[in-house]
Image (tube, rainbow, N blue to C red; front, side, top):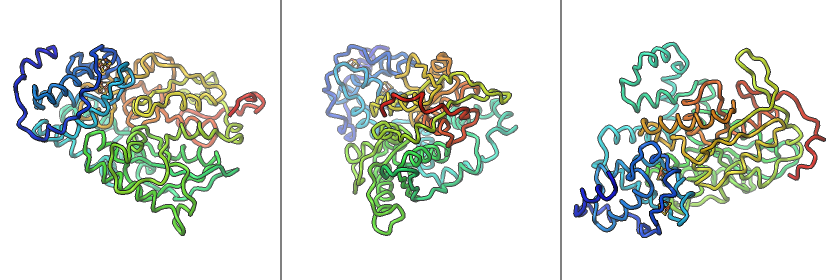
Length: 478
Ligand code: SF4
Ligand code: SF4
């Protein structure tokens, strides 16, 4: 169906719903219908319909604003297929801010009349658990011995999770192995720098990241401390609001953001556990969280504000530079193959660009530059680095068919680089990639790889094999 057919079906259906008057005024944005955004659009890629493209959605919003269309279940479903990846914003030569249009449209989609009951319930359930680590851990506790068990193998082989519905099947497939580390937040609030002191930062743990892949936060902490930074981790910190922000749940996002701000602000000061001196920055190691936190006070209204800026950990480390001592500690990496034999050849890595890092924060070179400091690393570039992997917050649970297609495409693109190790700086992408990649291809956070090369961190199948004499790295200027 073309957009014109679609309009002719619905034209003159005047809106009786006043809530639709909130639709963005920015729909007069200068979309010239050139279609440059289409090849980069993940939903258009797998669905192939104009209504599931940025151009189609912009056109639809304009028609709604002009009261030629009403937001109904069908139209809402075409907005639900959007991943919010913002690849279209990067691609658009006319500067159309589809990200702003989507941000203002998403709250409207949460009207129960616009989704079927199953979709509404699953979204409510996810938003009641994912942003709350204690609640999430209670569920994970019940599943503690399930991942990797014979029961899981049998359930998968017989397709039982599929019988329970594609959303349940998607959740089951994303479950990581669970150890005691997934259930504990044994972080010290104040973690003093090692070596020459270079500053003081706060670290955001993330709600999903700390429960699903806690080693990432440990690696980030080790790298920061080893580079001379005091690190403050408020022990009462919760979710930043990214998951609810992505779903247009404004009130919940503001509530979570206010609580996170309070936890950081109240950790610093005279006689406070984080010490008297203010933080130079608050660092984030998951790009979805970083993107949302950088919106605090801009598109997200708050009671209070953070007393320092929010930065992605890669951009912070590139800006400050790694310490001489840390760079000197970087050794060659080796893979361990299935028989635990070392493979000391060049380690080929593909860096996966998370959308909220690349399109949302304009961070492209920084993680690559950090990885390139490891002596025997080569970064192989994927052909379609700017296209979403299908994770997109809870998208891979609520839109599992589209997400699976995108996950397979991304896994193939990364595998085609020949890399055996994928670097991913967003927990959602990491889980999605692990689901779709061959088990021989591992996925780690860039700072896990860096920490491993510095001998600070273990990552299964990857070891620091040899320190390179410092003279071989002379000439580096930072
Ligand atoms: S959004 Fe931008 S790239 Fe896409 S059709 Fe409109 S003007 Fe072209
Ligand atoms: S945000 Fe991503 S999925 Fe949505 S319209 Fe833009 S490119 Fe397509």
